[in-house]
Length: 198
Image (cartoon, rainbow, N blue to C red; front, side, top):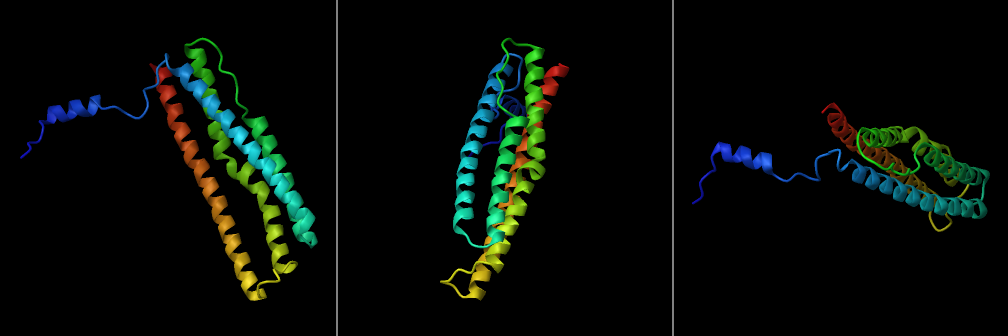
């Protein structure tokens, strides 16, 4: 039979428990800033690789698919990929963490967190919206100009609707992931603000 620990022991355990990560201090801001910039650099590299692949895919679509709608939609999608790559490069490249410590480093790290948070919060405008015209035109081209010969027209239309719903859900998930990531960054900004107040 076990007995419940006294209330004071519970409070002590609560205060002394290990939390996820460590508290933000002036001493570890440089390490956090360096890790953050490395993550940004890795994220950007991943995005550029994916975008290169998308340019190839949509270029191939322009070549093989019939009908002006699908060809124009593919060209618009390539333009969207290039626009997003430019926005990513312009709005938030990874930056070198300045040497030293103290409040100057805290200000640098905070500015970078704010820029990244704002980038993620506005992803609907600069990251998702540019793809919508091309995707819509490709979908309309599939509906009106290109019927898959191995399926009946009715069945093919059901497949197109299903793919359109999946793409809309995909855009929604991307938007939600960015909003959640922006919220997480806001918590880190709040931690830094507390450090600045101390």
